[in-house]
Image 1 (cartoon, helix red, strand yellow):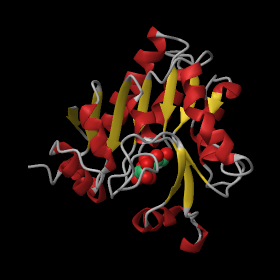
Image 2 (cartoon, protein in one colour):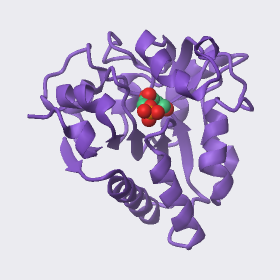
Image 3 (cartoon, protein in one colour):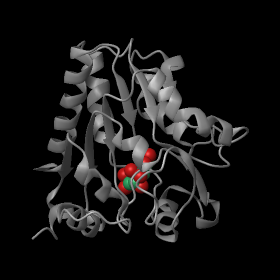
Length: 240
Ligand code: F6R
């Protein structure tokens, strides 16, 4: 794993440049995308670059990491909605090539074939990840098997608390999600993880210690051949 330390603006710009480089080198790239606060700066940079004509997404395909169970794609806290308003609606992507797990209806059946669907597109070329304060990546909470593929997961109490900031009330936060597994994520050819803020410092210090443990799911990344961890000073503050 490589580590890059910089302020939020810098690391967001650097990650966006990685995406631009990837798509310009391979216009039909398969991109793995995340939601949450962490990638927002990256997506803003991609929108800008697309509007400036530095990159086109017209032949790109995307796969998102996860979705809350119980929320329709039109719900303003669903991850499909998040992707539309923060990225897809502002770039020249073909929305039929954007994939987000389903949170309602036959969500289990869709989840069961998600890894095969990713493989049918040739696999993920570049995956962006955030990280939870408990070390989760996607919704793989502590205790998740390193061999997991896309599955239904229970959210940890700390994740429900962390994510309640985006809902009117903590009781509205879904308790389950569909998520790519740790093995699904490791199948990506290249991975970038972005972490900012003091509440990520413990998880980042444990990850950068370099010891794999299911108590911190992000430590699965230690074995990935091409993974870069982008952190701000706060997230890096407990690394000795
Ligand atoms: C979202 C996802 C989650 C978030 C994580 C951090 O698609 O996969 O693992 O990356 O919960 O969330 P933020 O960025 O809001 O701190």
